[in-house]
Image (cartoon, rainbow, N blue to C red; front, side, top):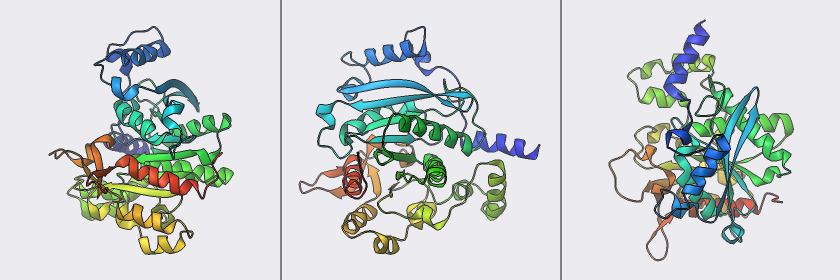
Length: 340
């Protein structure tokens, strides 16, 4: 009984989900999920529509993937060949794991720009109980199970593991780690990870934003018992060919002392990196902090990826984009990882 009570409490606090059909709520027409989705995509072709510019030269596919006894709503965004040709992400699939309050429909602009600027096919999903995904999310492993199901689906399509990269935002970075652990242990598969806007531990975030920091050990134990915290071995914080990370300057939720980057030991990571990758790794780790493109009073933690940029500037004095960072990682890691 205690476990159930704690699970419900932490679910509501950490990852509340909201059922309902987003497409119907927004006024799109159709008698089936695919008809609603098709109407949404068709409406974006109209000049002046919300995603008219971003959706051009992209192919959208909606799929319901089986996860246990449930159906998970997912979307795949593939750039046309004229867009992806000669880009670092060409032929790659980037699976997105979003954070608290993020559902894939809320990140269409980010995902479209992600696809266009890297050349990769972007895949995202709503976990159990979120919008039209069936079932109920009760703990972290529920979301991880859904991510595993999405990757299994990609693998059945003869997509090579080296072509699959995981992008985790905030809480999503922890979920993607659980997914990676599953495939490492069960099939000896190692996926690349882009760890974005994340933290050292989930407990640390909750404690930093509460008045009971002195109870951190007890809260950590209770969260693990309820299925809302994981173990963090040292290799979780390692960067290299298989992991890079992004952080946000001025983040009010994930403060510097509890950020993922604060736990990274760059000197050790550089020493362990293969020759030929060390220079890129140093560049990535030193330039991992993002800032808003336009000055704002909004917490950077809440900003969409397309509203951020690097502090580093190019030769013309223009700030490098998030996509410049990700492309540099993709291009460099591609040289060391077989890509079909």
